[in-house]
Image (cartoon, rainbow, N blue to C red; front, side):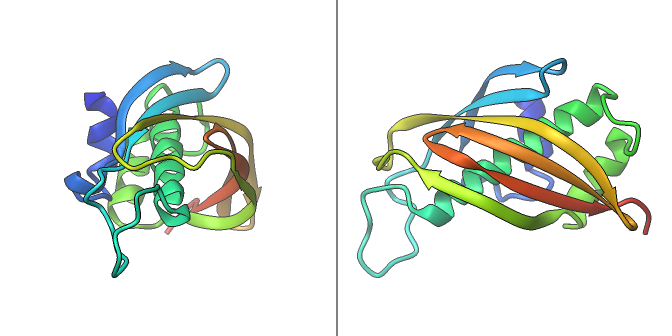
Length: 153
């Protein structure tokens, strides 16, 4: 988990990291499974909500995707980015969601309870001067998100 926290701390405040544990990771399958928990005290609404909101789920998906991509970069599974470059892109906020193909929220998860998400890198392709990573998710949320990052500055 220290490896994942090291990646996520480049972008997220420590108290906003909802990833509690990386349950499994496979470089060969390009897959990571994470265990998450959103604290009951985390809210942005006037009236505290007892369930994990769509935006909090999106943060969880983002954290798992960054973790998976970071692990793959660290294991040299990519030919387009070194791990040091990946960390620099994270720290400089130069990776972002380009497209959310769809998201299905399959459970009404109560805050303070643990839930699992799985991320699988399905495709990597170049779009002009950018690289696009298509990540598919399953677990409490199912869907596909495309991340992009510049190949060169």
